[in-house]
Length: 251
Length: 229
Ligand SMILES: Nc1ncnc2c1ncn2[C@@H]1O[C@H](COP(=O)(O)OP(=O)(O)O)[C@@H](O)[C@H]1O
Ligand SMILES: [Mg+2]
Image (cartoon, rainbow over all chains, first blue to last red):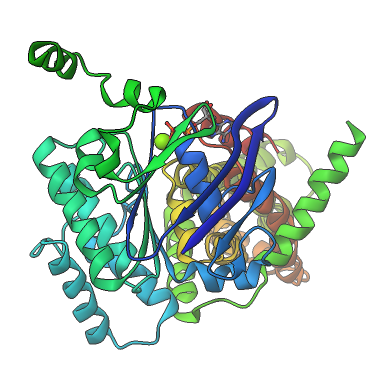
């Protein structure tokens, strides 16, 4: 469980986050949705501690991330996995070395144990036989999977995904979403996903938080999305002309 | 303006504290150091070779013409070349060239990693990025630069030999006599000087690379800043 308490963030004069309060629950896929530029990435980076908020606090169960010192922060970080918007795979390393990197750094396993763990994670994300390839030699969807495999290799308690399906076709997006959702359920992880993709919202949105101009505009689950009369939410969901046409026709 | 200076200096001191923390995993740091040593050492060998061979050659030929017709014996040229390359030219020119080449390479590498979020990714895994990305580079350059300087001095003397003896400016025996005459303790001084000269510019490069903000324009700027330090 991660709790954001009254988070403000400014860059110079620009107010990006303006008082966010939200509870991200364990064992559920928590979604942060909103238009591009609404502050999703900034919020996620504050939650993992890459940015310090101007004010407010972030609670990981009972540890306050904002006031924690560097050493306890690093300890906490070992329980955190993150999938970046641009994957951030190390491009001078093979897929296997990429996934093995956290194991090399923090564990004292033998090479065989590490390789087994890497293969287990690769199978978990339905990839195998790409161990010796480089990130530039596989497709975008496969890179995302490798990113997920690297994020879960140390069995994290918290998983963060920044737009896991941007730049992917709808079918691949859904498999990635389901994969993240399954991993969350199987290991009872607190998962936080940034997305602007309505398909993901309807597919895996168990606990949704809608950002608009740095404020929390709406919260709820995928079952409440369509019933709710919230204007911001409505505008966000029915932005596509295709949907608007469908609605007009059905009336 | 003045306060800014204190701010940066304070940041620098805090950053140094992070670099010399205990490594998470000695094996990984060792591997990275070896890789950096290879990059800095072997990677810079061609350019060091090219520059020092010409420095030596030009020194010998130039001094031969300057001293023609004087009473100074020709073997002095060997002596002059030895001292000039070892004391001054090899360390200074090699360090200047390496500062440009290796330094901006490092800044570009770190800047690129910052921009592609590699540094953030490592930070999130819990890696002490200041240490892991910088300490191996400092150790590698502390070890490799003196070796490169020694190689440069040797190659310089070889260059002067090639440029003077085969064309008959003086004999091989005279040259070697010159090189071996008087005290040769400067070698030690030379190694000391080079490692001293090197560490400061290096740290500046890495600082500007590591902290360069995201974005291509900034990457270029970080690189530029570092090569003009
Ligand atoms: N490092 C930064 N420095 C200054 N402004 C930033 C920085 N990161 C993000 N911003 C600003 O914050 C706002 C929200 O950005 P972001 O969180 O990336 O949006 P998105 O919801 O698309 O992920 C943008 O207007 C951007 O200009
Ligand atoms: Mg974003």
